[in-house]
Length: 178
Image 1 (tube, one colour):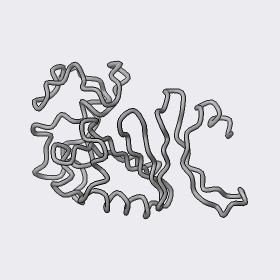
Image 2 (tube, one colour; image 1 turned 90 degrees about the horizontal axis):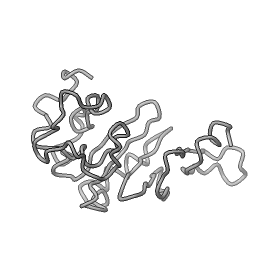
Image 3 (cartoon, rainbow, N blue to C red; image 1 turned 135 degrees about the vertical axis):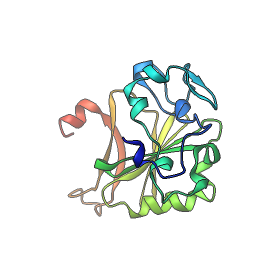
């Protein structure tokens, strides 16, 4: 990612929330726990040798001019990401602010994203578990293990009205198409 992709006038400034909410396997750092290399509000103490996943991460607030200042992680207590290939909006919430995405001015926007996606969903990492939102439905995915994946199923051929569901399966079962 080039710095030119960052919205003019935006930067991480004093924000280090991604260092808390993201899981970093290379550092054995679990999601929702502050990184031991984070100097809160200042930055990474191993910046020059930080893992590639950290070096390549830019939150959606930095990249999307459609997100207003209220979405800045230090204000919203959320870090947003996007997986373009899957059309999945990811919201990592600060464990010290559970349910913040359910408050305005955020809730209406999050619900709109869930209603307007054709092929994806909104994934919310909160506490030790995850929720998926699609349409008007909310799916509690619980705590996920490393050997599990999230699946969106449009219900084609299931005889129950082609209702989309989002659920968790073991990675091996997903690979076999089960």
